[in-house]
Image (cartoon, rainbow, N blue to C red; front, side):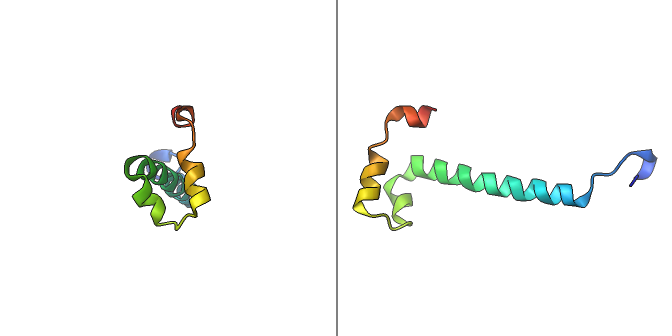
Length: 66
């Protein structure tokens, strides 16, 4: 499909996949940022068990750096 000036137009489904991928990855970025900034307040929304909280707090610092 060509647009004005003879250039090829980007298919609509490519834009759809790009937007969905951006939103999906944005949710991961939001979760990581909120976990680092608000810590327990953010995690409390997920109703974690004591064992899960201990696991989260036991993570070494190099995992954040990686």
